[in-house]
Length: 351
Ligand code: FES
Ligand SMILES: [Fe+2]
Image (cartoon, protein in one colour):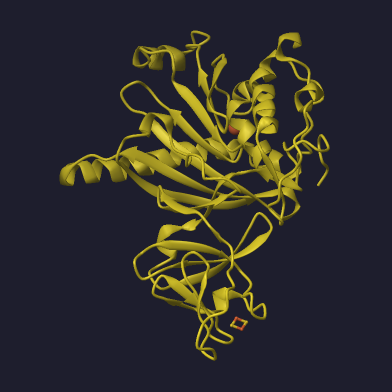
């Protein structure tokens, strides 16, 4: 995997942004189950205790190194398969069967959360920041289904850039729209790009859909930790919401999961309407994913010659490179480069 710009986080297979990362669907981890997972190069055991709480714990037992996913959930703790040492939900050793009192050993655990039917792990040293969410749905009770799970031969950053690559909507997806994005950082880990233009020409498609768009914003993408993207699109009266939860795997490639979301509607009718809407959302997502599939198998991303149409992409790149970076596998801090932004031309100079 070539490193596009050495030392920067963007498209870099050796470092990533401190943040929340998706691990597995909530329903794949029933009460009392434990699974082995590898997240950003580190091996973990993840289990659901008897209270329903999800615990993510470093994989290897401090006694002799057995993988804790071979063990058994015991209450809200886990008991190692090999010599039955037990660790609680904070990773503190609370029982050693051969000793009267446990030794003062512990093992690292990581913050977890469940959102949109997915288990997320906070990969970071500090207190967790905000979980990824769809900005329009921050306080809204939602229905959701999980869409496809996929592997792509390129970095998550590169895959996500597609959603704000304004020019390719014309060339790849044949949309007769001139798209210009406005960007706004929600916080240091989240940036939202919204389309601010209405239909650019008078083709039959634009004339047909124009009456549906009273407000200007019809398409937006919010990036979290450079790795999860939430898309909002549609006419004023019906917005579709698609989350692309991505994480980097070995070699700077991507493992992703799509999530389709819609606000809860009540009653039997509401339930039925939402099934239909979620199915429709999935078709919209598939349509956009399909056109680009091939290019992501072979791309060697390097934005050497940016133009005005690539302005949003540069903004995203700078947003990614400004965030706190950790090292692949060890999850230790990477020194931040003071001048990280100077490696790309300022957006005001774009041709
Ligand atoms: S290796 Fe885990 S208890 Fe011995
Ligand atoms: Fe695309």
